[in-house]
Image 1 (cartoon, one colour):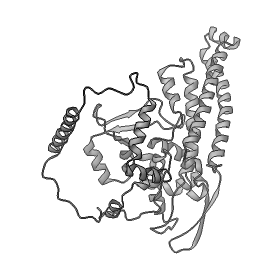
Image 2 (cartoon, rainbow, N blue to C red):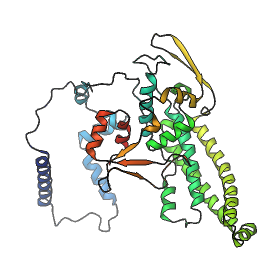
Image 3 (cartoon, one colour):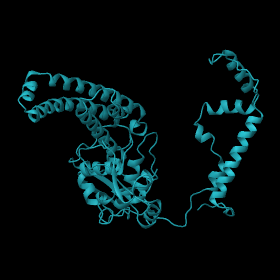
Image 4 (cartoon, rainbow, N blue to C red):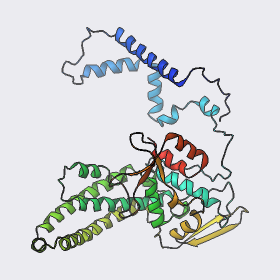
Length: 394
């Protein structure tokens, strides 16, 4: 609820609003057709971009004072910031009559990256951690968890996940739809709640000062492009190695002796050893871009001020920090689950997506399909599902 005066509610229903909008669109289309010159001739007969068109466009644009001013300003500044109107910003100050009793600071920003799921999950976790009596933080304490820490290990785990899939699907054609789909974005920034749980259970979590932001964590596009190229190269090499191993004498002999399982196990052992060599390269690239993260079993010391402004410290591993402060009795991450509303499929049922995940052998990505009304009730009644509903609703 903002500070601007509220407007009276419209006196027509949602159905009526839709009808009015459709009628307006129909009128706009009719007006456009009415003014359309059916005898007009295009400048380019073959569809190419003629120089005369460019000259004409620039002649018109150069005489427009608004365009001239826009060129002067927007070529030197951020477009979204420059076009932001002051009046709406002043009127909408985000003052609400209902608020959480404990609001950690600061407001977080994922910058130019696709880490919304990691920011959502760490913000939910810090709400629990910041209130833990063992830390003694003030209600307005400036405290946040390291999104980059989970980001690093998610990239590494996704790389392994993709290469394991590549090994499993090595007998498929390179243009197979599944192979192509998995190779399109093998380690993109996005993720799901169950992926977060996989990372938390395996690597724990740390306060942000222990592993702060880097340029590539806040601007991940270029790093992702380099890693994707390298992973695709590794996948191709694993496919070629798999084919070569299948043609070796020892492999053929084992298969001919009906020892297929033994042949497969031996072949996988060689492929996985080579995969680990490839992952070492991915790990090195990640440390160059993001910095070397703490090991999940490596002790760190976090120094901070408590609610009495006294200096305090905590020493332990990332996994110990997670277990000690994030696993609350009421808000345990492993007990939470994702809700979706997919009217095409049966409600009150569990769904998953084949080969969607980050940790090989970890918790599968699962969704409980429910009605939109139940999702609304979940938002009001409990805190944790806020994250899932925001991510999973269509």
